[in-house]
Image (cartoon, rainbow, N blue to C red; front, side, top):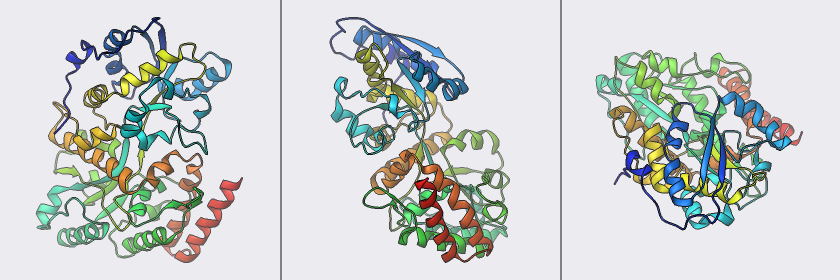
Length: 420
């Protein structure tokens, strides 16, 4: 049953609890990609009604958060609370919310993302609310499957199932390729997890080339050799160069693109000549892998009103408020319960609503079956892996080096750069 919340009713609802003994004002630095800050401001009245505290919000461009916030934290001029994306880079400044919140609620509903906020080696502490998740996963051209008379694999299908079906569509319609993927290790990580790649050893140290990683790398190279994947994708890039595969999907050149939830609005606005949909992340012996990410709201240790600041973050994270925020901003909730039950996205188009629900399901499955995806997202040196993998894997695809040599080079290069 989907979780439905009306914003108008929410702002007038008093959720219970004693009024604060002293009413404090919380300063809140907020940036928005769309309407996120506006939606949060609509919750201030209910927050004040519950706690007695007020919020003073300063809405700024993302460049202010990216370029100025850390300087403010270092100089003692930071806000009490802010919306941020550089979770690992700012973790030395976060306020631990644990003394002021229901830790059991947070662990149950946000446990999968709390590691992103913690300093290396830490295993506990509650430090922030993910306002939304971005999640990797595939989109398919439904019209192509129908025109080719090929049955689309369902939920729980493997990458092998999809590769076989996409090959049939490619051959049936005379396409140059069936599957495209953004050229980045971030996008290939999900499928690699599905094939059993762990990315870390039991001690939590990076260990990229295990049996699962090798299995996917072999499959990935073969997909290119067989023509299932296009020459305009990974083989056309060099080094760490990123290549966006979305244009190949928009133009109708491929039947599937491995991208992510951030493309939903782009496809909704720019695809008019075929039907499309997001599909569940394909599975494998390692689970159903997808890479999560997103933005968060955190409180800082430097605040002079720690209880009020923590209560504000906690208020936003409560189930009803998280559902309302996700619905009003067309975002995927980080709340694991809402990922499972679903959010009512109101007047969103059927394709957009379906895509949002599908990517929420991908996030939930990844948390359950490939938790290393969440570990990788929070790993402070994940940029090393992002930089190394595409270069050598592309050389294996193009035949510039053997796959064995490429995998050995990946392992050695990652180890050397992490040790720097």
